[in-house]
Length: 320
Ligand code: ADP
Image: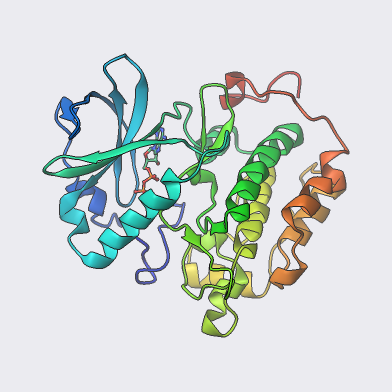
């Protein structure tokens, strides 16, 4: 999300919903009219409501030739302030420049009197977070395939000096063929070659890297995305993120102290735990590079499926 709360303007919503529902900026977003016309005359027919984040509501949109997209809809009333407007423009600029099979494809951007619309490739099979909720844990072969696709997309981003900074299961969507697609560039940033570091605190509590919590003294960069890969891999194999706690401050303490345990009753391989331990190194310089991750034994010590079917959405596929 491009609005980062609750640790003011820097930390986006936790993935676990808080009981007290705060007024979301996305609630300012009016349902778009049944036809939205762009400035150059194209018409899009609004379809089903797909979901909402902290900032945007997402609707299906059909173009005149019948192709279906997702339109991330942001109310103009929620971007009155300059900073928010700059952030939305930055999200659009970065996302627009991306083209990779495992990144949600940016299609177009337009506005009417009340909303800004970001037209995206539609991902009709929800996110990895929804899959995990339905299945509780995933099998190692499935996670291997998802990881390879996610890492491929992050290699593409990092080569272009883009740090995503909000990699989490809820921001990784499935296309109709169950390929994963990284989305939501609301916190992404381009790292300048001269400094290589950013000092803003941002991310989602469960996924925040320890050096981000360290504040200005350390700075952080590409390695925060590597950390998030470790959090996602842990969550997919064990059913919950490693530093999970009700209280955000407790999560931060656990992250700073690298305090997590592999559930003893799990049948996860020793290789998977070894890789996760490396990814979750407190010292960012000790985390493996993206190529080193792909060379890890875990990718070779068991089956690697060629494809995942939509059957995976409900149960462990029979062949895995
Ligand atoms: P925010 O920036 O407000 O967090 P998101 O990018 O997370 O907004 O989008 C909000 C919701 O819209 C998502 O949780 C998801 O349900 C839905 N959504 C977003 N992008 C797509 C897409 N490409 N295809 C289908 N649904 C999407």
